[in-house]
Amino acid sequence: MKRNITIILLIALFLSSLTTYADINIDLKGHWAESIIDKQFLQTHFKYVLKENTKASDLMGQIDKKHFLLSLYTILNAHQKEDIDKNSEKTNIENAAKHLRNKQIFEKDGSIEGKLTRKEAVKYIIKTLELSREIQLSNTSFMPFKDMLGLSDEYKKYVQKASMIGIVKGYGDSTFRPEENITALESIIFLQRLKGEIEEMNKNIPFKVVEEKWSGTGTDNLVTTKQNSGKILVTATKKFPTSGYNFTVTRVEKYAQGKYRMYVNIKSPPKNAILLQVISYKNVTIEIDKKLLDSGNYTFEIVGSSPDVNLK
Image 1 (cartoon, rainbow, N blue to C red):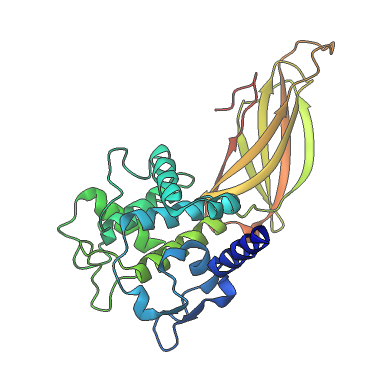
Image 2: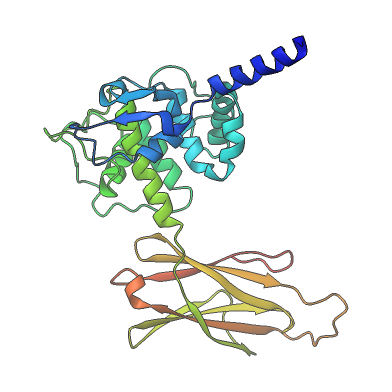
């Protein structure tokens, strides 16, 4: 009897401790951020600011640095959501700091305690993006906000880049207020925009292979382009010690304005294959709809590797 009562109490305790997202009410009605904030994003990456009934006023307080880093970590590791959800907040914060330090986003000797300034938040966001894409300033002397003159050159560039790609908009008086501590609401908006940039960046550009051929002459790692009736033909050339290698293009992605990476896969011939050892060049031509590429000039580079053929 006692055993049954214990089991019932444990089940009741477990059920009472569960807080489902469906039970959380997020009311931003009438607030300027109502049309900006994605509530699902808020529930997924900012659990620690949510109450049973969350209002805009609950998000106006300053956010702790460790919580900002935690949210950034959950965005970058969305594929590990189930594991993250199982961990305690303390464990996830420790994992976040370790991960972001390893990625050189967060300083190796930096403290996760305390508050976070707006300029620091922008730095971590831009460093995150620049792990996989190049952000080039079209005008390095342009100051998007009038209170940037006191910033170091390093922070000026971070703020310039964040403004250029739309991560930050600034205040109505044309200031950015870089030294002010960032609020939870501002963090949500900044990181939501970062997530959008990451998702856009990770979109593969569709293509189709139109020709594959071997040649006895060529230039290793050469990529050439040619326009043909609204299509762009991109030919990648790779040098091999024998024609027994398999060289294919697996995906194409944009990493900067007018700049694209062609990811390739290279497979060695079977070890017991009898092949003529003659330097050979494999040419693979793909076709891309011009509308999917930036206007103006564009360049492509080969990205990939294999155990015995090094790609530059």
